[in-house]
Length: 122
Image 1: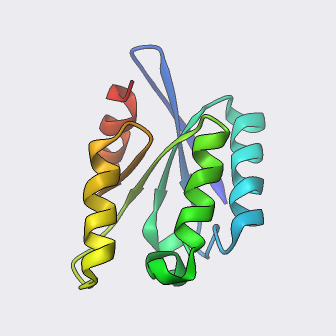
Image 2: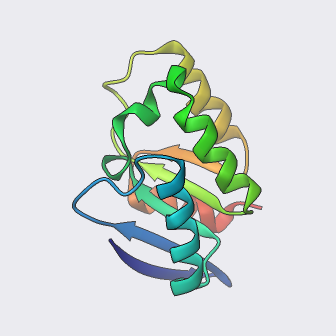
Image 3: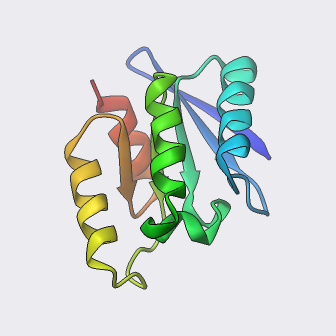
């Protein structure tokens, strides 16, 4: 797992990259939060959906809710980028839509869009 820090308009965003799953359960998400904060000082994280366990995107598992609640509880905004076209679940599409209307969690197509969302989030 590597971090790149981007700073725009006084806002620090950590872009997380890696070649394997980084978020696999709630504990790994908490570890990521702590590591990013310690190593970069950022409270905004960009991560590729390919670095997140696939069951995260099956809402009935409860994994997405648990993990995203941790991000919100620890005052850390997150943008997850990637191709979501393979998902046909209406609940997931609704979840993505509602998340994107807020200010803490975003699901977008590209890393650049993810950074922009987090830089502009209140």
